[in-house]
Structures are given as C-alpha cells and as structure tokens.
Image (tube, rainbow, N blue to C red; front, side):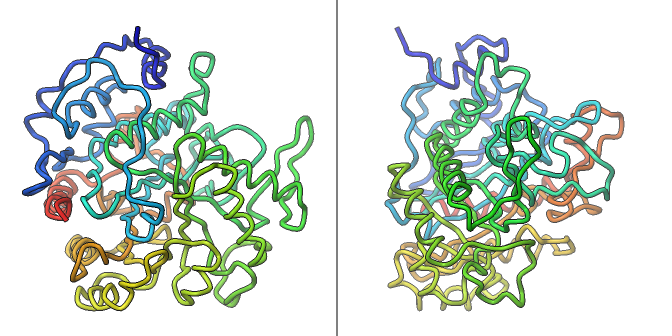
Amino acid sequence: MKQCSYVDKLLKALGENTKLKPDEYSNYIAFHGFDNAYNKRWLGNIVPADLLKLSVKKTIEIILTLSKGNEFCESFPNDIVTPYYGDNWGRFANYIEINDRAIATMDNGCTCKGILSCIKLLPAIPPSAKSFANCVILSQIWPNIYGDAYEKGPFEENSIYGIRLNTNYSDNVIDYSITDKISPEEQLKVFADLAHFRGIKVGFRHVISADQIKIAMNNKDDVPFNWSNPEHVELYINECVKLMSLGFECMFIDSAKHIGGYDMGNYTGVGALPEYKQMQYILNEIRLRSGKTDISFVGEKSSDNFERYINMGLNAGTDFITGDDFFAVRDLSDRLKYSRVYAPGVEISNDNNIGGMSYEQKLNRINSALFGFYYASDKLPSFMQMDDLFPLRNDTSTHHLMMCNPSYSIDGSTLSHFENLFAKEEGRKYNQQVGRLFAYALQL
C-alpha cells in the first residue's frame, strides 16, 4: 500500500480524494522548451487569476500533467528531491520573488492561505534549464509585526519588512483552518515538494535589522531582537534551519551589504546588524545543522566587494548590473567566469521597485539575464519579481505591496482581488513574451 505523501495529506485536509487525473486542456496549451528541452513545460500566456481561481487538487493535476516524463501518476509520488545543480547552484540561478501575501485569500478583511496560492501559481513558473536553476523566493514566511493576517487600506502601512520569531508561521501564508489535519510545517513542505517536482528550487526572504525583528514570548509582550544576545542568535539560526528541513534551500538576506557596519551611509534598515564574523558563523551553522551543503545565501546589494561576500558565505548578490546593456552583462559574465562560488547578479527589478518600467525594458533585461554570456556554464545569477513575470496593475508596485496589504477586489470576493491585482490582457500578452524567452533558455 502506498505511503501517504504530504501532498495526499493536504488533499485530504481540503476534503479531496487523492486519486488524480490528467488535465487535457493544460496538456494542450502548455509552453514547451525548445529543442532538447521540449519535454520541459509550463503554462504561459496567462494572467495569475487563471490559476488562482482553481482548486488545489486541479493545480496538482496540472503539475503532474506537465511532468517532464509525460507519464501521469494517479497519485502524487513520495520522496521528492530538489533538482540537482551542485553545491554552488545559487551562483548561477534565476531568482523569482513571489509576494505570497499579495496573492493570498482575502476574506472579510482577513488575509490567509498564501501558500495555497503559491502552489496554484507553480504551473506558470518555468522549470529550470539544463545548466542553471530557477528558484522561487517567498516574500513572507514568519508573521509580520504590523498587523499579520489583516487587509488594510490602500496606503496604510502593513509592512512585511518586520518579523516575529519564536512563534508559528504567518497567518497570511498558512491555512490555519486545516491545521488539525495538516500542520503549518507540512503545508510549507507540500509547496517545496511540488516546486521540486516542477524542477524549481525554493527559498525565502527575511530581514536582519534588529529593530525590525521581535521575539514572541509566552504570555508576555514581544521582546526586541538583539544580535548581542546569544539566545536570540541561537533562536534565529534554529528558525532558519527548520525551514531548510522542510525543503527550502535558499535565503535572501535583506540589507546583507551592510553586515558588519559596511557602507552604513546607504543603510535604510532600522536597528543594529550582525557583525561580519558573526554572520560567517551563522551561515556556517545553518549549513551544518541542516546537513545541507547546497544552500544558496543571497545578499541584497552584496555586490561591490566580491571577496568580502565570498568569505561571508554568500553565493550571489543583487543590484550590480541591470541588464539594460546586453553586452555589458556578457562581458561581466566573461570576467567572472572563474568565480564559481559567488557572483553579483543581473537585476531585472527588486523589492524597492515603485513601478514605471516599460514592458519593453523589462523584456530586454530578462533577455540579458537569460542569454548574457558566451557559455551557459558562465551565466550570472539574476533577480526578478512577480511583477516581471506577471505584471501588476498600473496603480500599484512591488514595493507598495511589500509595505501595504490592500485588497483590489471590486465586489469583495477573493477572485475579484486576483483579477484586479494584475494587468489584464496586456499582462497576458507580456507573459507570453516572457515565456518565449524562457523557452529558448531552457535548452542551455
């Protein structure tokens, strides 16, 4: 008798049976990679509402239908492993950040089930290429300290740049209505398993500015985080290790450039940062305690002093080159081809993006990121946001959705929020153009 997988457990918790069947429509419309990547498939030419309105079971059936082997499994297999690209895969990866809070269910002023929405979006994320991985970064994992689980006004602050540790995972992310049947950890594990089955790696963003972190205490007020407190540091390490044990394999570290007091004139976080040697210890401990030698540590803006970040333990850094100039990207790739552990990355856009970039400029940057090299084995890492694959509506932006948590629903329904958060037919056309770029890249 087949052992119950975490995916089976989620389906049962949602009141579904675990017997699955092919989705012929997805099989018909799927994008393919070119040439030797023809069996790598995903759903392009979409807007997110096409998938977010589906059931979790239907999504899993689509994921199995798009399987590279084209052999459909009537139940989801056990023992899923991450796609293998070596210990230093993060040096070459494409990182795609998904704001799981923004695509969560919004119901009567509450925000929840973001991880289920991320699962539903997985069929539209291109799988990894022959030579480099695609990695989805989730914007939020832990509760935020400014009103977790609540929708707020369009410009009322509800930032996810502040986190609470020593408690459970965010109400924005987890479906707490079914935790008597499947735990929050198991829900995160399902997401990781399904992403890995799709040939995609997974990671999470977090902050390290002390005044943006709180420690939850039983029956007491939260305690401000302190990098000089060994108990706080130990708690921080163990929280990260727990996520690695669930299948996560990448940490995107906010404000990493300024660790150890470096370039503090440009620091925009709030509160103290870890010391340089302290961060070396922390990253090494996360690798040791998780038993994973292939974790990718990505530093925000950590891209101007390469030796400093290599020795810290990072694999990639953002905000060094934009991709506007294809030849500049290709030349940088060539100059850094012997640096196999760490490289600065090509940035299409970041979490501070306030909008205004044309579709043409974004497509040009993605083209540079995916093809700016002489040999695919020398590719630079790249960084993009949900908006770079699935354009947001014109009056919002990536940064706004990090700072605020508005609903864009017209009639109060979650489906209306999904439909109106993103650009519509022009967004669909743009997503098709992005898909064509990835279709060529997958064979490399």
